[in-house]
Length: 292
Image: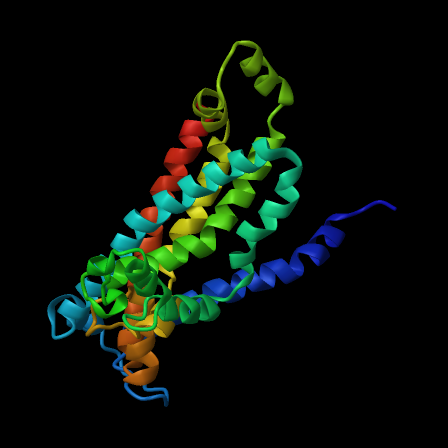
């Protein structure tokens, strides 16, 4: 059977509809961000850039910049440890042979959990009185290191990031393991013949050859940091105060709790701008580096 252009359009039609719907919703959000819409009933009252002025220079400026700062902290603190641990674990699993069948599910299990379950689990572990972490520190004689953890404004964001690293390390490990297994075995055999240790093989053979996997891992983790919401909601609800709020959480509160629909849409537009500002240059740099 000969396939024609009509067949191709027929198969692509569902995808094209989804893409059109996505861009249509983005255009609708931009339109709402320029309206003075308060309350859940539609109010089409053009407000121009008033919502953005309120966010950037008005009463909500401190809250916006706190949320933006926390998103940037997530970008810096979450991505590098998650990707690095994933790569180390992937290389370790490649070395252990048959034991991989037992160990791999242990590291993959957190991926199957929702952020709600992860947040509940880690909130209990961080509990100052009944939590596992503080009780373990007291049991081994390090009770002076016990902390209020997520009740401390200076530590809470990093505690949330720690929970996210635990959940997403297995995701990074899976992609890196696939990249390592895709490498020709002759490369590893040649390294062993030359007397390279496992550490030297990792440094000089594995790392230079998993750049394509790193590009995907980092890009996906960037998107995770820009849309993180569940962990903040479950573990701290943005507190103490607003110290752990991120842009998606701020957007949700402004839109559905306070019913400032125009303000919430403006925050979502700022999230989109931030995503483009981070992802596009990174993708361009990564593609240039891979092609070099």
